[in-house]
Image (cartoon, rainbow, N blue to C red; front, side):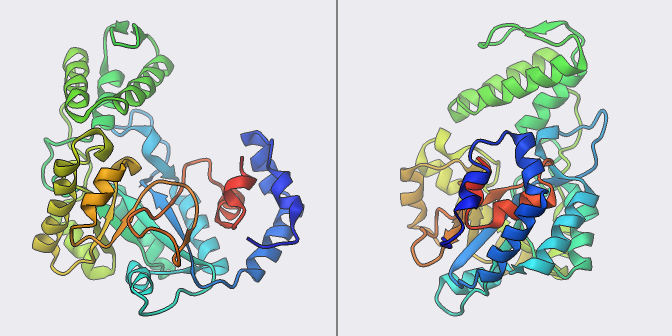
Length: 346
């Protein structure tokens, strides 16, 4: 933490999201942020960004809109800012630093993507290549070349969008499906409810709702193995993300850890040598999962816990990441990356 800048702690303390966005775009904040960025010389601090999909807003999209992280233009602005003001590092560099083989540069940032949707190759990777920015893509390895296996949030989105009935009965009560807005709201409520269920019950619930509403049978939107191999040849680091993307704190620890280890083995079989790195689906983990993961070959594991990582003390199996969503403008991104970022944006 950098002393001498109390205004930054209070500037964002009680701001609404709209006020946060306005404040982050202000000249006063820009001046203070520039001062902090120039003074940030620590080589043990790692910031990790989490993206999912890079796509424009699509009417009638087959994919759940909550997974859209940025538009292509917005993502380009992010990468341009990062390359100018920070040191974007590769997973290989981070792995070596965690092993004590090298140091991170000041203002180190690692860019990561989860789930390996097609638009990573179509939209995000060409932009990253243009700026020579390294990136890591975490792959749920049962999905490539398996179009019958679809992420549960996309299944619920498609089912609600296609519903031709006015309501659906759920444990939350009847949810209205009479308008596009109500269908979107129903999907959001259903997705939140699924995350509270044990793994088997969650799967049964999603199947029941999708069967009742008439889920369209469409592909999963995940890159195939040939495309993933080509990305790896071009310089993308691939990491494990389980096989079937379960929430690992909603199932027994043994099967959960098996999902992680088998995902790494899938990558080794299909890609060749890969780093022993892993991202928890949805950031879901618990102490027993972490304890059992320590007994495996996986050395770095990334959560969705917000914040930055002091590599001198941070648990290498609980590395935090900074979530990026469509409302993350460059000024908001700048605030999130600063040492005060989490408190500033409250």
